[in-house]
Amino acid sequence: MNSKSRHRYQFKFWLDENRDEDHVVYDLIQKLKHPLKGQGQFTRAIREGLRIWYALKNHDLSVLFEFFPEYKEQFTTAIALKEFMDMLKHQPVAPALAPMGQGSTGKMLTAQQFALPTFDEDDDDAPTLVMSANTDTDASANFLTSFKALG
Image (cartoon, rainbow, N blue to C red; front, top):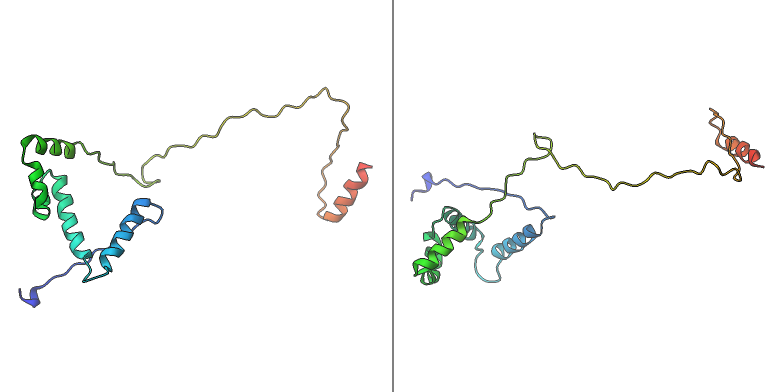
């Protein structure tokens, strides 16, 4: 291949530190990028992983058998192969989630209902506190005035 016609592409993706499955992916990436011996295998794992994922999503086992020929023997009977293909077809697919505020409606949280407090108006034994409106902003004078009114 001529080096002048070589085109390379780079892709980025994000992992969410709040998702447990992303922590597992992060740890795996670190192992693949920095193995104890030899060169990193991260790029190879991404290429092969995407090929297998896409093939299985399209009910194609050829790529799986290409990378793991030992599994082909387990699918020699038509029954085992049919069971596996049925299992792939019935895999649940997560619905795409729309961000809040872009036409999607979120589920409203509900608070537990509780009874409001009731006051016994027949209780004449308790002292009555009389409050009057005052626009004075002097806090210390207000405190002293209120204190004097108590006694």
